[in-house]
Image 1 (cartoon, rainbow, N blue to C red):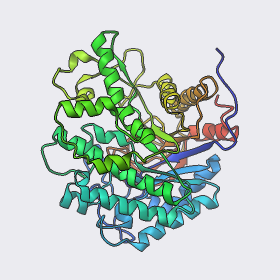
Image 2 (cartoon, one colour):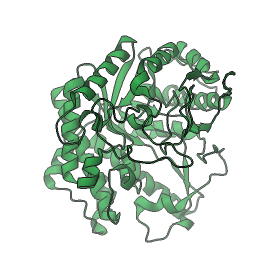
Image 3 (cartoon, rainbow, N blue to C red):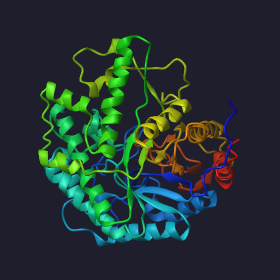
Image 4 (cartoon, rainbow, N blue to C red):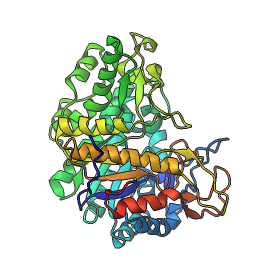
Length: 461
């Protein structure tokens, strides 16, 4: 069948996604309190988090680049410790005013703001005092923070998500991103963290639906995983991974309940996730206006590498192997546009809600010589293939898609703090240990993406 080359809907959202700690800087400005990232020191291959790309002081410059691209959506994160320095004390009006001005700057440029409330930068006070989202106190503090932000900005911000890549709280990564600082990282604790995070989402989402006209949806890092072979156990583990890490969360977002398979596993293995009947009743009222996800690569599971005793939530840690049919980036992320199309269909055909991919991109080591444009044809090829996969899902498979947001399209620190790993169509002139002049320099991909947006996705060549 010929590739689909149709224009996308007129209301389609083209944009960029970022987190606060990877973008803002301003770690000790405007009354901001410390987050767990602010005390992390630089290493050989990572920066500290104090400056990032200094969006705190340069967002007007960055937004002008987005406007010139033709973008009409920007997903950013509110730093919890910037607006509430201790996480559960008094709100910081100077920090709130910063985000108010940022939102107005977007709207003035015709760019739809989209807010994420938590992207792993737990207020340090809550991490040290309560061990992050292992604590019900922290979950309730998050709800207070989230509802206050909705009250402050809900009149201007239509689209909301609570937790970035919420299913990462269902795998061992949870202990790194939840503000958990001490303990034995038990399976019980993993399930307690994931449930507390879910209840944080539930309470904010239910508040939004009961009190505002805003739209909120669940977000996950869709873990597209294939069986390594047609061996039955490979297929079984790949299916179970999908159920536990993807569908369990999606069932809660859409149907207000956890997967019965997951709950049966919890019961059979006597896992104490500390879920009360009252909480499950509150969960039953949850609904989503859309489903959003990040997607960069797919994975492959080899069951021969996974012991029979390994909890399902840990099998990727043992069983992941390279897919021989896919190319890999220099960071060993395997490029798989067809997997992107598959995710659209898994989400839409099963749940029948609008789908919003809000992170997609390729991280590559790049250096600027100070004069010549960076020829990042590999980035053009990556985004073109994924946009085509998205269009095929829309026009061949019937999937309803809200928009397409790239990740870090103005260079930011990677999730590990490594400035060498760049996703942007705009280069930021700094490296891990030398801030240089922080100049913003469009790459070749910038002009290609500008053409794509101008034709509303019709011309992606």
